[in-house]
Image (cartoon, rainbow, N blue to C red):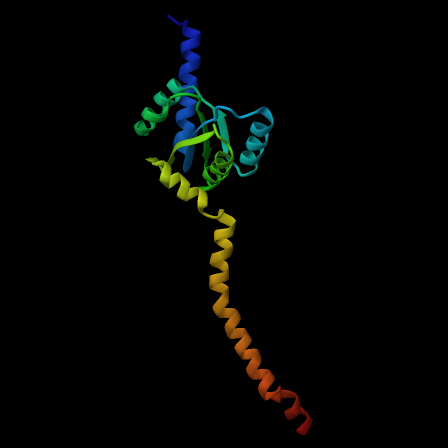
Length: 174
């Protein structure tokens, strides 16, 4: 039987994991087996730069935390080595970075993920990974809004260029 101190530590770890799951808009579970230190360091650096929290977790603690936040469907995926990547704001970063790395590795693989408090299958994680970043999507939307305005400005300038600027001619006649 574990001591009270160890049980208290585990309860705190489960509570912290539950808070992380609750506050995240998206998360990805991976099997990190076979990753070397250099690749792991680079992967963690890329994830940190994108604002993604990444940590190795104990399956039993993650299962308890997942039950606490109604993500029970994660349980079947909690076998072997497990790492959890979560983001509080970017829906695509974790899936994009981890899927890119998994594509180049024979042993590192994406298990599943969750999105807005619901577990999603691996196919949806792959779809998330293929979406562009938030910044690229915002730039695309801005370009879409800007295009009609820019076209109008070019048309107005073409009319002015074609007809000449009548204002200076009127001033010279006066």
